[in-house]
Length: 422
Ligand code: GDP
Ligand code: IMO
Ligand code: MG
Image (tube, rainbow, N blue to C red; front, top):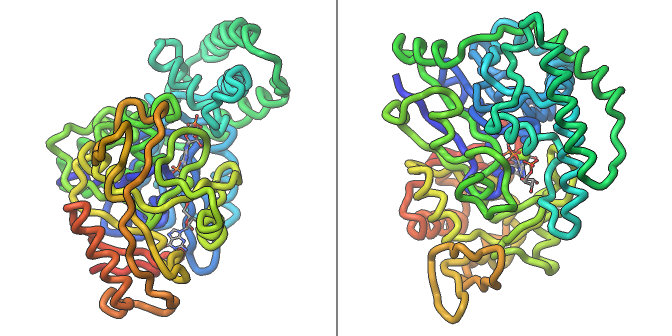
C-alpha cells in the first residue's frame, strides 16, 4: 500500500493536528517524520482540547498505531508530560505508540544552547521556541548525537557526560542566560526511565513491512514548508526538512511509495517568530484576524503575526511538495470580514513576479492584491459544503483557480466534525 502525507503549506499552525486526527481512522499507521516539541498540534474532541507536541495526532483513534519516526528529535521531559496528559484523559496508547530507535534525543544542554544562541543574536533572533531543536539537529548532522536506542546501552551515561562536556564548552562562548541545568538533568533522567516503558523499534523496517502487508500509512508533518531548512525563509526557519522530501529521510520510505500529498493552508496566513512575511497586516485587520482566529501559539502562547493569504507563497510550497490536494482551514474566521484580500503577485525591485526572490529577507516586497467580497454570515451549523454561502464557495473556487490544485475539504471550526468535504 501507499503512504499519504499531511503537511503545512505556510509557516506552521495551519491546523494539521485537527486534519490528521480527522483522517486517521482511514489509516493503519500515523507517523511523525520530523521536528520535535517545537510543534503544537491542537485537537478538539467532544469539547475537550488536547495539544500534542511529539506524539502523532492519530493517538485518539482506537486501534491505530502511532510512530515517532527517526527524523524526529525527542525530548524525554516534554514527552513524559504528554504521556501523562493522555493517561489523565484515559487514552489507552501503550501498545499503539512506537518510537524509532534512530530518533535523536534533545538533551537539557541543547535547550541551554538554544537559549544562549538566541540571546547572542539580539535583534536578529530567530524567535525559536527554545525547545533545543537547532542544537539537537546540529549534533545529529555533526555526528555527535544520542539516539533513543542508545538509552538501552550500558555506557549511555558515559556518552551523555562526554557530550554534556562538549556543550558546556560551547555555552561559555555565548552570553550568560538563566538555566537550571541540575534541575533539568534530574527531570531528563527520570523522563528516560518512563520512556523505557514504550516500545522502541527499527521503524524503517516496521513501516516497510507494514507497507508490504498492504497497510495504509499517513505521514504527519510538523511546522510548515516556509520553515523548511533548505527552502524556507532562511535563516528564519527550523532545522529540519518540513517538506514532503522529509518523509523519505524521516521515516525510511522510498519516494515512489508516496501517493497523496495533502497540503494544509489557513484561509489567511500567520507566522510566529521573526522573519519575512510579505502579506503581514500591521493594522486593525491583522489584529482582528488574531482575535477572531485565537492566533496565539499552542507551544509558547506567543501572539501569531497575521495577514492575508499569499498565492505566490502557496504556489511555491505546492511546487516543492508535489501537493495533490489542499485542505483550507479556519474559513469561519473570515465570517465577519466585509472584504477579503489575497496577494496574487509580489512587486519588488520595480518588477511584478509570482516567484519568491532569494533576497526575501533583505528587500521590501509589496503584495499585489485582489479583493474578494466576504460572506458576512456565520458558518456555524453548516454540515455540508453545498450549504456554505455562495460567496464562501466563490472564495474557495477562486483560490482553487489561483493555485491550480484541487481543494478537497474546508474546515469551519476547531472541532473534529467541523470539516466539509467538497
Ligand atoms: P497545527 O500546528 O498545524 O496542528 O495547528 P495549531 O494547533 O497550532 O493551530 C491551529 C489552531 O486552530 C488550533 O487552536 C485549532 O484548534 C484551531 N483550528 C483548526 N481548524 C480550525 C477551523 O477550521 N476553524 C477555527 N476557528 N479554528 C480551527
Ligand atoms: P507546528 O507543527 C509555527 C517557528 C518558531 C521560529 C522558528 C524556529 O505547530 O505548526 P525552532 O523552535 O524550530 O528553533 O523555531 O520556527 N516554529 C513554528 N511556528 N508552528 C510550528 O509548529 C513551529 N515550530 C517552529 O516560532 O520562528
Ligand atoms: Mg501548531
